Length: 316
Ligand SMILES: Nc1ncnc2c1ncn2[C@@H]1O[C@H](COP(=O)(O)OP(=O)(O)OP(=O)(O)O)[C@@H](O)[C@H]1O
Ligand SMILES: [Mg+2]
Picture 1 (cartoon, rainbow, N blue to C red):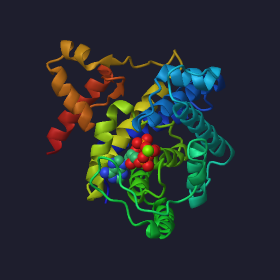
Picture 2: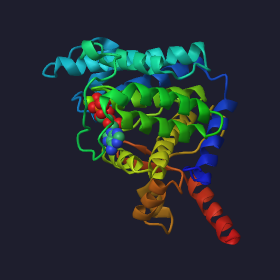
Picture 3: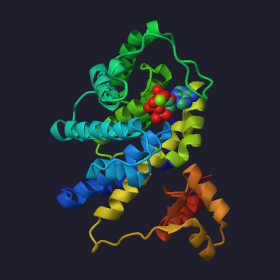
């Protein structure tokens, strides 16, 4: 059973292998990207749960140690803690690529992101029942959490060599928030844990954008009743976005680079409307990634889409 359409799976593998071919990656450029991604993810992951800091403010707090007037102390602490968790994650990957995901590791990540805002429960499973705001799904009874977490790790280890890693990380993400083992910080912990798997496989850090919050909740809701495909596709799109940004920044200038342009610009030179291109992008049929609110693609990606479409028509 696979939830990842072949065309998307192949594309991600091709892009990852393109990135791998560039290895060893230039150290200072990689460091710059890492720092940028750490700030971006800290901002987005915290903003999804209501943290009021902007991207710029997050940057200032982490890199300059500045306190932003008028913003809650809690928001500052969450930003710092989340950033620390990312540094911890990168450290793990740098030291040992094969580090296995365990309950202890998940609890460590939770401990780090919550330690300044909810000391008592940092790294500890909940002992009472919870609900997820705005979701229909009701997480299991608190008494069942330890067993469900043990089962989750057993499941993960049994799937590691069988399932595509993007798909596996998406499913792990969902299973974690479905159990909702902690009182708070479940989403952030799940997004970090998912990234551990992806980064071990060589993918760059993957960020769920705050702008996509509605979509994110929607695909999790569908996954609650077994509809995993929208979630897997959504995560795959986020993976592709990070890959595109890494490739764009790390491909040496001598190698031909694809220039990313907005769908509106593409629509001016093709017979497709921007609306239709947007649909293709969202369905994953056209290579594209989101920057801010805009979808970006390239002329080459349009050519590949057209070629693929003709090929598929011939087959069917
Ligand atoms: N229908 C759903 N089924 C399972 N999990 C869901 C559903 N809707 C949302 N979630 C998850 O619950 C998380 C919110 O839970 P919680 O408040 O414990 O996490 P958080 O890290 O504090 O907040 P957030 O993840 O929103 O930043 C969401 O981020 C999302 O990952
Ligand atoms: Mg929360």
